[in-house]
Length: 115
Image (cartoon, rainbow, N blue to C red; front, side):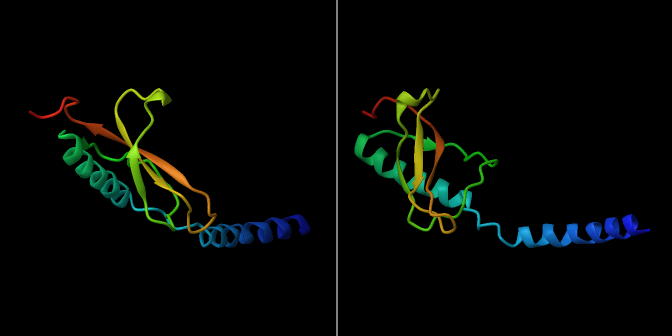
């Protein structure tokens, strides 16, 4: 009888523990904001280099913490073994754990300058 009461007690506590854990999850960064940062970078690069690069969609499986600072974009280093040109969107510090992150956004378009 005592064991049955212990199992009932533990079973009733599991939903409370799960619910409490869900409240502590940090906010997630909107992927459209990441894409927008990459798009703005490419717009300036296209003007400067006379190219026509465009971003491809951001991988929807990416989940990163919301950034506390403004997002910065630049070309991703080519020495990282990337198969294609990408824009690297960087967050220096997040709202919750203050760690940064970077997301690679694939790029499509011609490599040669316009005439």
